[in-house]
Amino acid sequence: MFPVIFFDADTQRDFIEPRGAYPVPDAAVIRSRLRELAETARSFAIPILASWDAHPKDDPQFSSAPPHCVIGTKGQEKIPETWLRSAFLVPASGRRRPWVNMKELRSQGGQIVLEKAVDDPFGNPATETLLRELEPRRIVIYGVATEGAVRAFADRCLTLGFGEIFLARDAVRGRSAEEEHRTLVELADRGVRFETAHALCLMASEWMAERRS
Image (cartoon, rainbow, N blue to C red):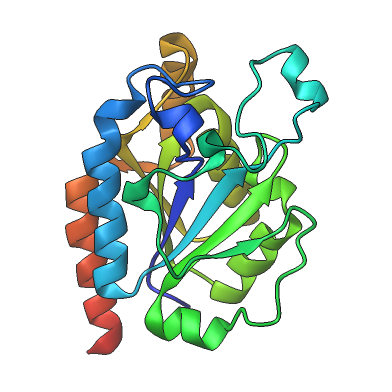
């Protein structure tokens, strides 16, 4: 089993930046914590799975939400704080490209960007496949929105038994304060542990050190 992986939920310009097409309230304030998490992953070779909204411009979902993360637009991009230059994309079909090397991912870390056209990161079939191959003992989750992609990912991981789940409480934001509170209460009741991003970075470095000792 692998000591820990990070899960980055939808940290894209349209969601994080105040002038984005569909901004999550106050999401900009978590950017420094998102940067710390990404830098920790880079420094300690912690694999990052990152969900990535990718919508056609005529997506039927836009009947209930403003057009956002349209394929090829600036708003679809990940914010610079969470983008790794070595990242590679897994299309929404779940078909992984030939150069995805699990041995290298385990030994060197890196970022896998999982394209999706729905809220649930498991809408990309490769999400579950990669988790089963990585066999993480612990998963650290952060990003937006708390009651959306964050919750969907955590809920499915709990159901499938993918390791111990940690939430970086100060590195997530929800669209609705009421829904976010309800989500956090439910996740806590199911055993999700809440820590600050900084604390989780320290913990993750220790977990990775144990692997090398």
